[in-house]
Length: 387
Image (cartoon, rainbow, N blue to C red; front, side, top):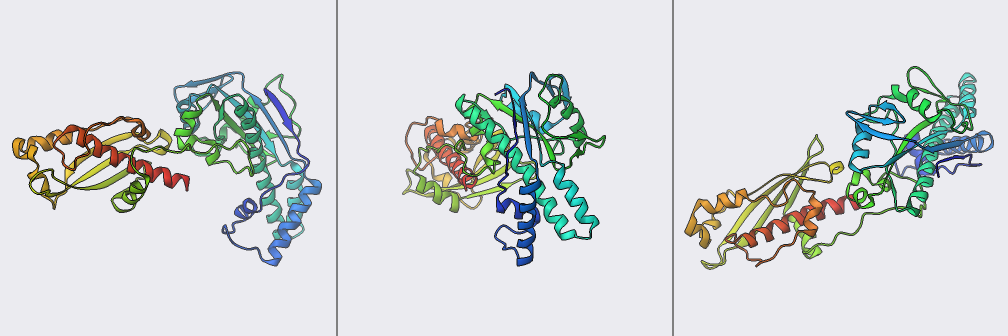
């Protein structure tokens, strides 16, 4: 699995993907005229298109300061470098895919003949073909990786976020290095970075042995971004095992938790805990928990956390420990930041012992409550991503 070429006799572009590129809403039905144009483009390409895929394993990979070096060539994609570094990728595969020049030439002819509708539908179908070809390349790599206990990361391409399209020519030169198989079709890069034929794409796929790491970092999970239908190698997030009853977590996530995404990718979480003291006739008390999490890409590390009495509630003053120590107890509670700096998912393996008392007098009871809070946050995020 070091180098291979595919020239599929046909490309089964999913109707939903084609409609998406045409600009239609997900559930929209094509008009009779639009359906005729879409079928015409699909039929024409099926008879005249010459799609192809080329892929090979890069001979070397090095993560330099601010760059990814592939076979000695430096590429400045922050997103690709971060993905490879976090997954501790050992290698990358280089891929090139093209719908061929035929559709481009036909589209040009249709435009010159004054048929803009036919031109547009064929252009978009060729774009869908390229997307599908890159997905097929990922599927081929997933098949090989799965058999070897490896995982393939989502691909990156020049022109994607944090990767200048101007580096397309340099990547193509690496793809076509001396000794590599000849590409099955024409492909060149202009000084601007545009490819010719334009319905073509270059891609870099990272490969890692840390399958569990990929599953934990949601942004790196390949199947989150893969549209290959009926894939037998699709990886799904592993089920989470909580120490708390999932029904309670579901209720607390809906009633007590507020998650606020921030522009920098972090998440602010607020949780209200209601309990009672163990003495003084069970006086009601309320505490506010605040947690700031890093981004999904980083695995939701716990960046900051606090626990303070709710402003409108004075029940904490009836706790026996507070009566004995006064504000010193609140200072101790504020200093406790369990799992700080660690991924949120670590709460699932955090051993907590001791009583589950409703008060905050003992450290074990406070740990128990922090566990409830962090598990509720994890449940809410995990459920949202699974959906």
